[in-house]
Length: 207
Ligand SMILES: [Fe+2]
Image (cartoon, rainbow, N blue to C red):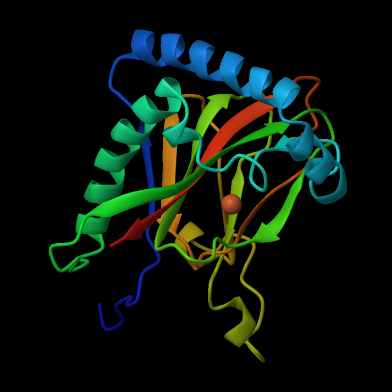
């Protein structure tokens, strides 16, 4: 083959733990805590009304949940193992430093709520853990990081290989962890199901 691909963009997707029974138990516990948090977090509800229409996120109000809740501290431990594995795949030289979860927050998307295109500043690896994912709820849509540089490039053929397409959507699957480098832009389309979709997002740093 005379042509080879270089400079790949990596996305990691794995179940949080191997046991489906443990995942179900854990997600029931996390979902209850997420809903309690929404009831309790008036500042977060106020911020969400303005910045996360129709939904609730603790992003701007309670974004260090792993420091205050044993449920989320347990989740931190499990996520850290996945992030280490991902950093190894990326051949990152962490110079002997530890990787550290800096922010962890809750997202509840009732019907119609959406999350527009964004990235995660001040971190190196970010991700989402899915807690409640009603059938047909939106996944996480990633954008080719070179999109702004394509200039005069023609569009892709309808049947283009997936790796050559400008977007890729990972389905939201309860119990799964998705990891990506924090600069990779992504969005969540509107929730068109009749039920709430719940996820926990987080940022990691190395220091
Ligand atoms: Fe995000």
